[in-house]
Picture 1 (tube, helix red, strand yellow):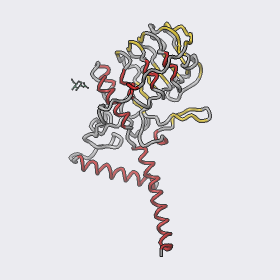
Picture 2 (cartoon, rainbow, N blue to C red; picture 1 turned 45 degrees about the vertical axis):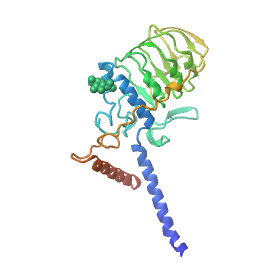
Picture 3 (cartoon, rainbow, N blue to C red; picture 1 turned 135 degrees about the horizontal axis):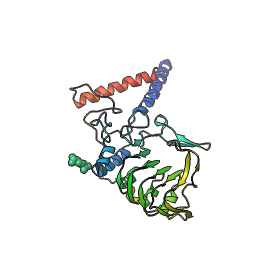
Picture 4 (tube, helix red, strand yellow; picture 1 turned 90 degrees about the horizontal axis):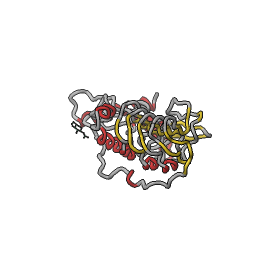
Length: 300
Ligand SMILES: *[C@@H]1O[C@H](CO)[C@@H](O)[C@H](O)[C@H]1NC(C)=O
């Protein structure tokens, strides 16, 4: 008896496996931002949003699903490409190095169940103050771009703890002191720009990228990579790296706020539940919408 059943059963199993593949692919697009990244972003926002009008304006979209849905669940990455919902935070998937070429995988091909915040990008906003300390909590950053702001003070050693960094772009600010020698330990760096910080001085840690030369990283239109320091008092000499600093303080504190679940459930920040629904009804509404999307996705 059992053998007779096995064939339709097998067909069913194959059918549901296909359904599952479709489901997985669709869920990728709607996967949430990784919780640790959201918590880091919330800590960053809370520490800086009231620092000045400029900071307030730079971070004004850092709530829920962004400006289109501030009361949605916190989802900095969103589901519409790498620019994301929270301005200045980008989620470009994994940094893939293959056959000497490096590129972003894009969100859909990224590994893991959630989207990582990979790029911090707030240039040209007149942002004042010291190098923002709460950057240290972002666990997955590949890029820090604070180009053309009004930052001052010394560059912190703990940047050496952000071991995924590929680009640090700090040109046209007013930082003082020297490039911390511990930065020379960053294993993946391809670009460090500190040009036009007139008070920056001293040597270049040995482990920083070679002096500026032709090349490209995929998140920049700049045709040059390497280390550049024009318009500073840096002397161009290389000096020894310092040992790694203590990185224990860069772990996100246990009492850091958790992501807001929002009062309007959403998958991606652009969907609004019809007026008058209770949160439970809205949740069900979005669950059904997601199922419809999955069906379309698995039976194109
Ligand atoms: C920022 O200021 C506003 C207005 O005074 C206040 O409501 C809010 O709680 C403050 N946020 C933080 C994180 O301090």
